[in-house]
Structures are given as structure tokens and as C-alpha cells.
Length: 126
Image (cartoon, rainbow, N blue to C red; front, side):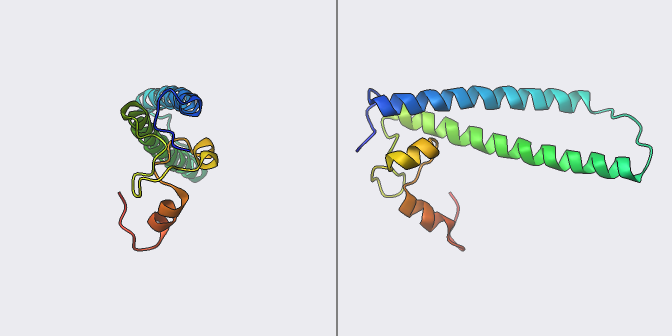
């Protein structure tokens, strides 16, 4: 089943899901940016345990921020594909992406076969 038509009910459903997630991620990233600004002057750390806990929290926050930014980028690209009529088609081979895969990963640009190729060691990243 080709999902290139924006009038396709599945495409509309998944585009709405993508838009909702996009809004969630933007709000989360804005909140994180605000927390970073407010946290520029952290309270005085009293001992090594506090230092270790603060460093761990900072690493986790940084990883979560990077993950959210990456997911947001993938969503923006998926919504562009909806707009240009190529959503649901694999960017590599041009074949339709399976509906089950799109429901699980609505921002995916690749069919399962092409994604497998991209995940092989030594395959250049896009």
C-alpha cells in the first residue's frame, strides 16, 4: 500500500501523531533550555557524593536533550515528506514502507530492508 497521498487516512493519522510528538518535544526542549539557564549558578556542592550526583545528572540530561533533538529532527523531516507526497516511501529504494513499521516508527525514512543495511557496521550514515 502506497501512502503518498496526504488524503490517505493512515497518512493523516500518522501525521497528526507526528505533530503531537513534535509539540511535546519542543516544549520539553524549551523547558530544558530554561532549566539550564536557571541552573547556571548551581548551589554550592558540599562533598564528593554531591559532585558525583550532579555530574551524573548533567550527563543524563545532556543525553536526553541530544536524543530529543535528534527525534525532533526526524519528525520535521517526516512531516516534510507528508507535505511533498513522499511519506511512506523508503528514501533509499522508493518502495512502500510497511504499515506496521510506520505505526511503530512514524518518522522512519526507510523500509525494514534498507534500515537493516544502514545498521550494518561500516555503512556510512546519512
